[in-house]
Every structure is written in structure tokens, then in C-alpha cells.
Length: 215
Ligand code: GH3
Ligand code: MG
Ligand code: MG
Image: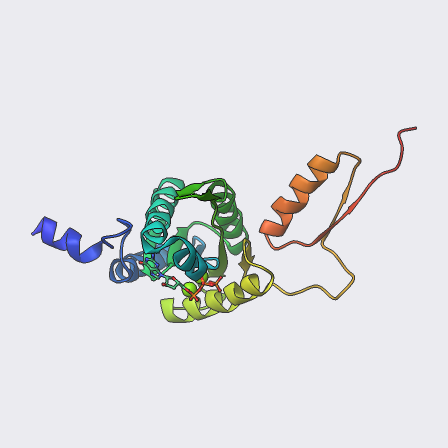
């Protein structure tokens, strides 16, 4: 019976929970969040330009990418958090105890680890794949899974429009043209670049300026 249940709840390719299992577990997290007055967030991740990965390298390579993503995410998120394959190249996360901002930070850090992963491909340079994500907070952006999914998907679409490879919270808004969120000041070009990249991954726009010659 246990084996049967495991099979019914697991996605065979990635080994992650499937959508049905996620839906049941998320319900439990919702009740816990309400009872213990804890924040709860829902994140939706989607691999960037994944169709092109399949088209260029074949579905077998695409499958390996999905398997490795499943492994990385289940190592990164543990304890109360839920990780499931929602379907296709989409992964859903239930982040217990995390506000929208905490959720973005956690998922962005997973993305930073993920984009260092390389995949060998026959006769071509190693491949790297990125993903994008949207994070919605239970109670504020939706009261049930369906509305949270819709909210997260809508902001995920914006992340894609910006070129992907970033995680945005629901409510994220494009700045007025010509304004930025953060100004990175410094003469260390490499450090400024690293900082700007980390900020962009979290949906912040920045401007790099040098602070002039040393006195
Ligand atoms: P975007 O950056 O906008 O998300 O573009 P995309 O190409 O990732 O999105 P699109 O929805 O056009 O393509 C999704 C692709 O995911 C197409 C489909 O073949 C692939 N896919 C879905 N499930 C699997 C799977 O189990 N294995 C493999 N190899 N590919 C899959
Ligand atoms: Mg998709
Ligand atoms: Mg995609």
C-alpha cells in the first residue's frame, strides 16, 4: 500500500511530489499558517527557453535538466517547505514561515546555485539553463492555491518579459523609466558587477557608478 501511495504521489522523472500531492500538503500548510500566525508563500518556477533546450540538444538532455533541477531544489528547500513538479517545466514551492520577500531571497539563492550547473552535450559547449519565478503570499495575494497560482504566474510572466533568470514578488512594478532601486558605487568593476547581478536576480534595478579616483 505504501509503495502504491508513493507512486501515486511522485513525479517519475524528477522524483519530486506531483501536483496532487502538493495540493494536499499545501492545504495542511495553510491551516498551520493560520493557526500559528505564520507567513506562507507560494512560488512558481519555470525554466527559461526550455523548448529551445529540447530542440537544440534533444529531449533526453531536457529530461536530465529537469531531473537535476528536482534534485537541487529538494536539497535547497527542506523541512516544512514543499517542492513539487507542477507540470511540464514548472515547479511549485510552498514556503512555510516565509513572507514574499523571504521567499524571493530563498528562491533567488537557489537560482544562483542552479545557474552554475553545467550540462554536457555531445559535440557542443556545456549548457547552462536558468529559470524564472514568481512569489505570492498566502492571505494577501490569494486565499487558495488557485488564486495564489494565478498571482504568481502573472508576475512570472513579467520576469520572463525582462529576460528571465530572476525572481519577482507579486506586486512588483517596473520602475518609471530613468529611475533605479539601488545605486552601486565603487571602483571595483568586478564587485559592482556581482552586486548588480545579485540585485537583478531579486528584481531590483541598479545603476553602477564609479566613485572617482582615490584621494
Ligand atoms: P519561456 O522562457 O517563456 O518559459 O519559454 P519555454 O521554451 O521554456 O516555454 P514553452 O512553454 O514554449 O516550452 C516549454 C517546453 O518544456 C516545451 C516542452 O517540450 C518542454 N517540456 C515539458 N515537459 C517536459 C519533459 O518532461 N521533458 C522534456 N525534455 N521537456 C519537457
Ligand atoms: Mg512553462
Ligand atoms: Mg519555460
